[in-house]
Structure formats: C-alpha cells, structure tokens
Length: 318
Length: 288
Image 1 (spheres, rainbow over the protein chains, first blue to last red):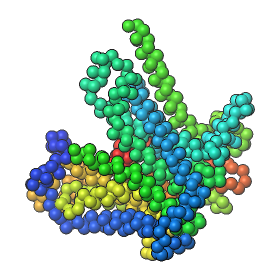
Image 2 (image 1 turned 90 degrees about the vertical axis):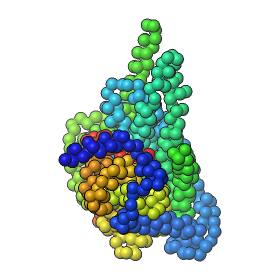
Image 3 (image 1 turned 180 degrees about the vertical axis):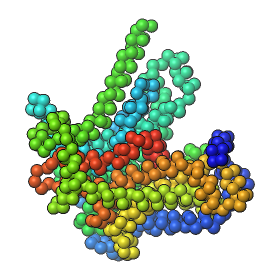
C-alpha cells in the first residue's frame, strides 16, 4: 500500500511543477487552510528568531554605540567605539586581512573549483574516484583542517624539513612563521577545504547546459577549451556569482581555521575579525570594542548578501 | 585528420595529469597525517612528517585515545568523543524534528506572514555567530543553564533552525497539494497529515538533514568552546587544546592520531553516504 501511494505521488509530482501551489493560491482557489496547530508550531520559531537572532543582533549593534567597556552600559556615545576600533592596530590588521584573505581565497577556490568541474565534465574515467577525493575535505572540520596544514607547512617538521631531507638544504618555506606571510598560508587551507564544493555546484551547472549548444559548438568546429571560456562558463555566470557569495560569507565568518592554523600569529599578523571579536569578548572582556567589531562583521555580510538576494529574487519573479 | 586525433590524445593525457595532480593536492595532507600517526615517538623526532613509517603501529592512537594531555589533564580524546556524542544525538534529533515540522507548517498551511517568516529564517542563517554570542550567553546565564549540556544542545538547535526549516520547506513545497487535500477530506488534521502523509515521503530529505546537521554539530568548535562548559567540552575543542599545548616535547604522532580520531566520524559518514552528503552540502549552500 505505501509503495502504491509513493508511485502515485511520483506520477502526480512529475506532472505538476513545483511552483503550482503558489500559482493556484494566487488564482483565487486557496487550497491551504488555516490551522491552529500550524500557528502553535510556528510560534516558538518566530519567537526564537525574533529574540535570539534579531533581538540579540540589534542589542549588539546598540551596545557598539555606547560607552560599554567591561560590562554593557546603555549610555549612548555615537561612533566613539568605531573610531577607537579603527585606530587599534590589531583591528587594522584583522580587517585588512579579511580583504586580502578573501580576495585570494575567492579567486583561488573559484578558479580551482571551476577548472575541476570543467575537467570532470569532459567525460573522464573514474569520475567517481576523483569526485570522492575532491570532496572529502568538506566533511572535515576547520579545526582538523587548520591543524593538518599547520603541520604540513611547519618548517621544523613539514614540507621544508622534507625537502632538506632530500638533500636540498637551502630550500626555505617558512611562511607560516613569518608575520608578513602567515596570512597567505590560510589561503592554501581555505582552497583545499572549499574548492570541492564549488566543483560540485559548477559541475551540476555544466551538466545542465543544453545539448543543442554543444552540438552547435561542434558544428562550428570550436575547440572545447575555447567553448568553455567564451560560451559555456559565461552562460553559468549567475551560478558563479552564487559561488562567490558563498565563499565571501565563509571568509567573513571564518574563525576556527585561523585559530587552529596560526592562532592569529605570529603576534596578531594573521588575525581575522571573527577571532578579534571572540578574543575581545571572552578573554579581554571589552564588550564595547567586541560589539563594534561584530557589527562591522554583520555589515560586511549584509553588504554581500543583500544585493545578491535582491537580484536573485528579482530574477526569479521575472 | 591524424594530427587532430594526436592533439586530442595529448589533450586527454594533459587532462588526466591535471586531475591526478589536483587529487594529490587534496589527498596528501590526509596521507601525511595518517603516516605520522602510525610512527613511533623516536621516528617522529628524527624524520619529517612526509616520510613513511618504518614500523607502523597503533601505539600513538591508543595513547591519543586514552592518555593525551591538555595541560595537566591527561584523559585522552575519548573524553571529548563521548561529550561530542552526548551533545550530538539530542541536538540532531531535536533540530531535524523542529525543522521538519516548521517546514511543513510553512508549506502546506495558510499562515499569516509565512513569507516574512521565511525571509527571517533566510536572513537569520547569514548572521555571523560572533554578532549574537554575547547576548545569548547573557540569556542562558539568566535562565541558569549556561555552561551545561542542555545549554550547548539548545544553542545547536537554535543555530540549526533556519537551515533545517528552509531545507524541509523547500522539499515539502515541491510535493503535490492533492495529498494534503485528500487527507483533509478524510478528516485528518495537521498532525495526522504530518505523521501519515508527509513523514513516509520524507525519508530522503530526513537522511540529508540528519547528515548535514550531524557533520555540522560534530565539526563545530566555537559554540562548544563558549557554551558547553568544561565538563562537556566537545572533541574539536579538546583536540585544539591538546595540539596547542606547548609543554615539553610535542608528540606529533599522538596529535595527528587525535586529529584523525576527531575527523573519523564525519569522514565515515561521507564515505558511506557520499550522495546524500553532497546533496545536503549543496542544498545547504544554495538555498531557495
């Protein structure tokens, strides 16, 4: 009986498009009815979202405009916290690092992810094996990822030591211990962890490209690499924008990776805003500065997400 | 003609070479960590971590599990492992249940402001943890459960809510409305339709959601660090503490073994349920 039902359901589902529910509601024959139970189920969700997410976020934004130091106070002080924040050397480094790390991480991850998707799209043997290897880092936590790369890049036990062992004793690769280079080592780990995801998303997009287009490309005698660069990848531009937004948000939020890999060091040379906030909140107990820094993080995420969602919704409604 | 086919063959070889090179980039860190964890302490001290173990053994794994040290506390990572399990099971069950019911209510019932609730959930998923950590700590202290098992479980459910709800909402919205209509004509209400019509068809999405939330909770570091308290420290927090302890000689074989033990549960889930894992990750990534 359940098997029959599911077959029937699938048949109906295949006939009806996913959007039919809203379409019919709009046509004036509402099939959805009101139910007290539905309201009761949603009430806690709404309450939790309003209090814990939006209420808390607004509280933090307000505290960032007060004179709070060790404990929150509610005396309004305008932009004083921000002025102080942007004069703090450690924040200047952390904030700058966010852009540096972000730019390189986005460029590297998108490039490698798209490249791998294109390679796998060429109907290769053992595709499953390649995919499995490219995607496994995604299942590993940022803590383990960070520690692993810390070991691999450590000059005393890792890659440099290995090359010395081969007899090439002049070889130097000590970026992770250098204040001017440590931030770049985070990019390796970031690309390693995320490019599988971008590969999976892009490959799904490539597989959805209309066969007629490929037929036309073959008729015109355009070589495959040329076709990808000038025709196929430009067609997937919306998907690439999605990928960029995803990586950018991950960059703004990143915390575990830097904690495990460099712990913000040497000194605070590889600090990031996420770590700055947690340290100022729970170790240095400076709520005012932490709230101002957290508000900058929130602003950064909104600056990425808001235009994206706006255009996405506009595109879908069209 | 022959030249074209030769070019094509060179292209194919280049393609496979590129793929193999990138796969080396992806797999070498894991292989290095595995190799190091199988070495003896003497070997770790004298060779680089890239060398192969001469006499592979699981001594470091045993030590990591039973007696790896965090400062003066030498309980091994099995303490963190069981803490993580205790956090994981209730968090995942409650999150998946809450997400499925919320998603169902938002998709097949007429609720005033459903679109606004969905927008709230969507935007909520983007708020960085750092923005709301401190107010949450204050709230949990006020109700007196801060730094406890129930606190960290509540926090995981809270942060999982937007994603889980939207995942289920998108799935249920794709199901045909006739199902609900027919059930309603038979006199079934909100809960009966959920249990007898919706849940039997949700097996796939339930697996995807469970995997997504399980790896998310297991791999979490920040929330465990702030909300779990000393007695419930999850495995990731303990692992980081062990690896950054700088007293005495650093035992890389023990540290790598501890890292592998921490990474093993999500890795196993990934290898045994690859398709579902990828679906969850991409669905979680490309919402709506």
